[in-house]
Amino acid sequence: MKAARFYQVGQPLRLEEVPTPQPGPGEVLIRVRACGICGSDIHIVYEGVTPTAFQPIILGHEFSGEVAACGPKVATWRAGDRVAVNCLVSCGRCRHCRAGREQICQERRLLGIHLDGGLAEYAVVPAENLVALPGSIPFDQGAILTDAVATPYHALTRRGRLAQGETVAVIGCGGLGLHAVQLAKVLGAGLVVGLDLSDQALERARARGADRVIRNDQADPAAVLREAAGGEGVDLSVECIGRPETIALAAAGLRTGGRAVIVGLGAAPIACLPPTEFVRREIELRGSYAFTTREIAEVVALVAGGRLNLADSVSRRVPLEGVNEGLQALHEKIGDPIRIVVTLED
Ligand SMILES: [Zn+2]
Ligand SMILES: [Zn+2]
Image (cartoon, rainbow, N blue to C red; front, side):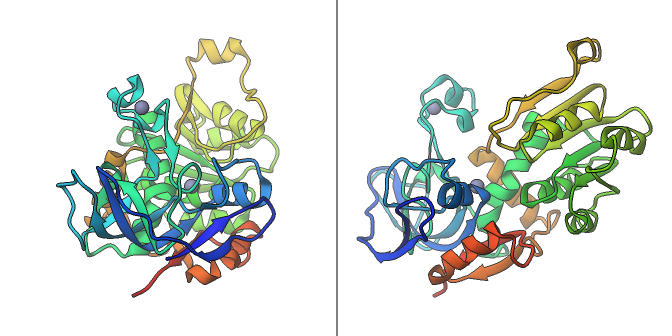
């Protein structure tokens, strides 16, 4: 089969012919039909900040396709089933897995980072990592919903505990943040405010349902945010950048008793409110990582039910042969990408 393999930081992926993997017990062979290119792939290929478990490795952790074959002891899937893949492979035994929080499994491994991924004609995945994809959802949307949409969904629902009518601020309106804005509205938020440095990103946030947009490079953006939410601040803020100053903004924009959920990854330590305020106002600051298979299924249901429209989320499609062009376009933001998806046709 053809596969796009990563050898070394700073080098393009190599499109190579490799043996088609065989599914073992409990595993399924997927014929990949679409695989999104994610910011994490940029971290791997260009920045070297996310080391892969081995090289050469097939990248790609956001994918969908059809079941091609099932290994022994797989009763739930049949050849031809359309599926979306949860890239996070968990152990099923540790305390977090047993508590239904497989995303923080102590032994978790990610397809496309620790195991061969989806930038290939075929991929082997555990059967329990599959979610049925109805025929009404195109494969490219089925791919991106597993990460770019499921990540903010987990942040808003499980970690943010968003309730009907609550006010929400989304800081950073790129791929994750844009879907956070859209999902917040779909999930019943009241006022939704989008914050970003780019007017283009803010325009898109408005198109996805943001009631207010604020440039966060102005003087005291937290005051502008609190003002936008009636002077008190928002109930919930979701930070999608991972920088100390935007995390501080996420905390400072909250009402008393509000929750800030941090989705963005970064290396610099968090510094936000002084404890005199943080404590007296019972501010919550929570990390939010990835998603569960069940949450991916919930996102699929939102799309299938017509409540969540992802038709505009795939801004470009490239064939497997064009994967390096796609990576470069995302890295250099050529064409203002939302999500670039590698598609493999019949
Ligand atoms: Zn990703
Ligand atoms: Zn586990």
